[in-house]
Amino acid sequence: MNDSRDEGLSIMVDPKDVHALKAVRTEFAKRGIDCTRADIRVHHGVCHIRGTLAKLPHAVFEDLDEEIHHLVKVIRQRPDVREVALEIVSVR
Image (cartoon, rainbow, N blue to C red; front, side, top):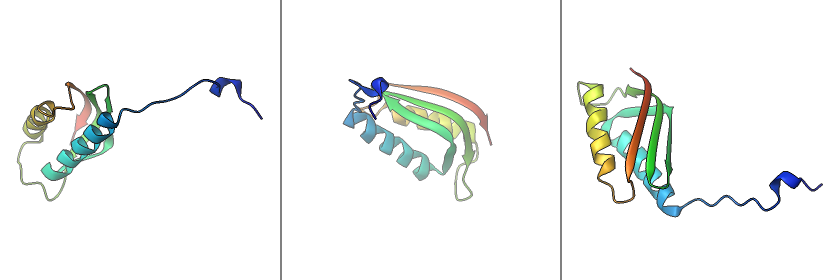
């Protein structure tokens, strides 16, 4: 069966965006921030973080808001990330 909606459509994913996304997720884990209830995407070098972030039990920092602010600075310093769009619904 031929679905005409799929004809001619091709979704290309930039390998740089895939690499950047993996690096961003690694930074969250290294810093003890739970991002399992957040949607994290990198598209054309812009990192979008939406949802809920929480402190993991093994985290050594005190203030989650401050740690997120620091993490955004670290992410922005990556050569494969142009900007970070942070839309956090709640922080726990």
